[in-house]
Length: 149
Image (tube, rainbow, N blue to C red; front, side, top):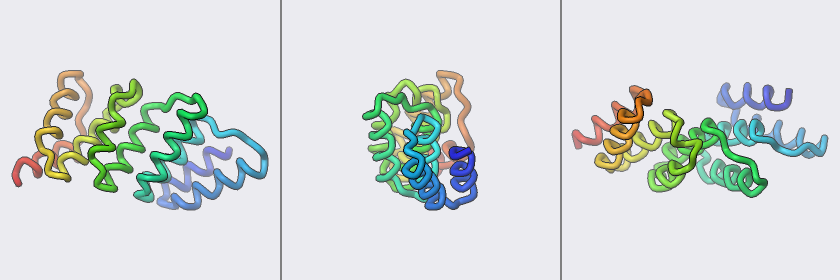
């Protein structure tokens, strides 16, 4: 129920409310965050363009011996993309969860393209195509615009 309420807030652009719900409920009921809770928090940070906080949650997650899922990595990469942190977005990709995540790879490709790193963007798109992973229109469009510059 906690994760569902926080997820609904995060999806509805109420990222700060999502984080408050998580923090207050976990504190009041002395609950521990699980992979889903961390994923919800990282997604909320992504929606709020808070890349530093998203990376902190990801670090806390691994510090608690929890393995980040593909959606967790994808949300963190997307937050880095929104924060123009293409190098950090790329640094998250070597994880097992990210390799299978089209969203993470697409967001990283978009981050590289937005930073004028069109070669890196095309490399990511090429690796996605070779792995038969779907390439979203946003990543493809960003790469095309970067090549145009």
